[in-house]
Length: 243
Image (cartoon, rainbow, N blue to C red; front, side, top):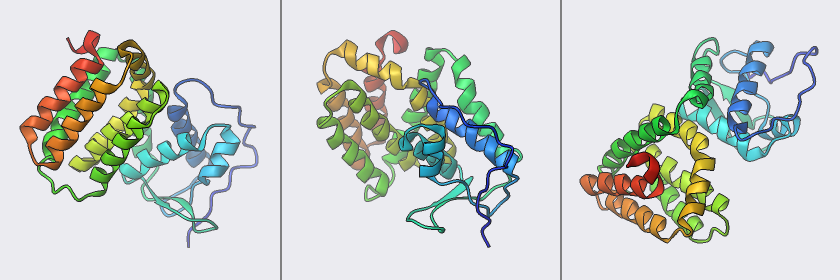
């Protein structure tokens, strides 16, 4: 029987999470609650809506935190409403989550060059692997949906949101769950820098051309072309860093 989450009575009132690293703060809060509540494998975490309201953050921030945890196999998320909806712990919380949080929270001590170089290496490998996989997958559909959403974006922030979704779907397609988790952490760290890059370019036409070259190379099974397209895209998006 799944034991539902109940927060300890002595838990202090939650203050609003603020700043550009809300995603990492949500992860840290989830770890704190797991530790204090003594949840174990099979127990249920607080729901997405409940956490968003208590932490005074957007549901998308909570959803992204749960998505990372699910990608790593640390929770199993169940859709729907009622007592059977939400995320259930599928791991021993004593070690694995702490290591994940150290990754996310430790990114603040890295230089932007280190973050972008790491993301580039992951995406180059992922693009080559993704191009070797039949294209009728959920991740391919997610990439196509992100392309359409970027075409319809009205602000740099909106464009970057869907841009990140495109690159995460690319990495997910390659099938390495650790790379997927790292990409989500790196993407969140790069979000504001990416918005500034779009402002600097003044338009998104060339970036979208790059995205379509990447997508075409992957869906037509051309690993070398996919790697080249990713490399050239990064050189365009982050020239002060990649040159």
